[in-house]
Length: 381
Image (tube, rainbow, N blue to C red):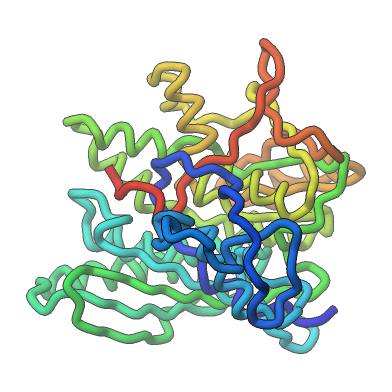
């Protein structure tokens, strides 16, 4: 198998999912192909807008920007932009690499401690390593901050990063510091996985079971709590800013040989399934009653609870597909192989056609491909 492009890592970043960007962007009229690309009957943003009204990133969103970048950096490898990690050929293994940016305006709610911010900036990178089924090797970070930043803030930030890497048996290997008007942390994590065990977003087949780790809606519930003056604010900040990367769970899925695809749920279930469907041309059918909902969602109105669980994101759980002939054995072994008591829940199955569907007691409805998308979504509330 040829080495997939390391550029696949470069254009993903953590988000607080708030808005409702659609899974498919509006089509634009045909433009002449560029950079040696072949003309397509389905024109894309990568070919350049033919109207003066589409001139800003806010017009095309993060996924439109990724499409442009992927055309420029595409070198014909079988796996390009759009995976959780980029990979580099490393003998019998792959070196997997990911980078994510956390910045003050988009990711850090009021009241967050330096330690929480440091943990978060590290954990969101390690979550991508988990989605590849890899064992983490190390972490580096570039810190940009104002010159008048309190030294104790820097110390707390570093302590949060150190706490996170120690939890997963790695170290902060170095990085960079620069002056900037606002705080920004660009983290990069490295991992290692056998070539025949790497988990990608592609590979699902009709009949596969769809599974998730942990529960859904914890981060969204926390964001709702933070909208109110409440004594629970400290707990909510922890739920938002101290996600626990599912490294061990990803490695179990990888080593089982049963997983056909995997990604993390940073942007929400709906948009993540839409991305998988777009890459595989398959249908993902989800049962509402099967979803492992965070217990706090019961306190929210049903419509709000549904929106949070399906579309808010920020949970950093793993979403995977498992071969139909292997799901039973995997579930039977899971309690003894996965640490911290994290459950693995079957929430639906893959079908050959029919679109992404949410199955409820009253029938079937389209599962919307909406979630967080940079350049289109608002800042954290």
